[in-house]
Image (spheres, rainbow, N blue to C red):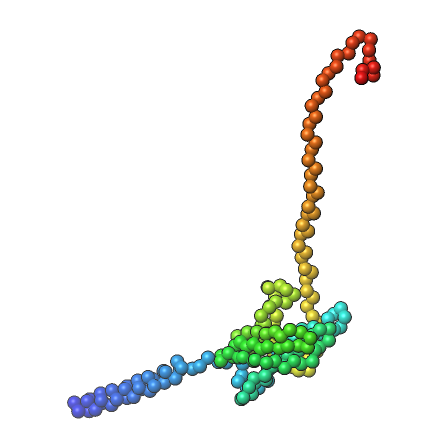
Length: 200
């Protein structure tokens, strides 16, 4: 009877040790799970805010096509200047290892070279560019990720009218100095029977 209790205790202790060792081995694997990348490592993504003006029917906005290959990442950049531009192939495409930010350099025809920087939203469905919409810092330039390539472009947001700066008052003309006071002429005594017209 005593021996069977010892065997039972030893087997339950061995079982507990085995379960504990499996738990210890599994725990680091759960803790080491890498953070999910927002941008996939391979494939093509398109971000766009292209729209059509309700006033004249012309395109407005930008479109960024990111192509990720094993050897290199490339960007095609399109923008509007009345009509949609030819795609400009970007140089110096840099994507951070987490796939949350990237920037690239473009030089459109007849324009200076410029660098465009953007940050992806948490879900990767929008690219927010540095800068602002309508020169309003409260309205960032947000390009949505395109999933339906056959959809019709929406209507462009109209920029609110710019508040004009208050006009500066015109400078008043310089004041002319007042003439110095003239000494009063001495009073003349008028004799009886004479008028002031006869004095002189």
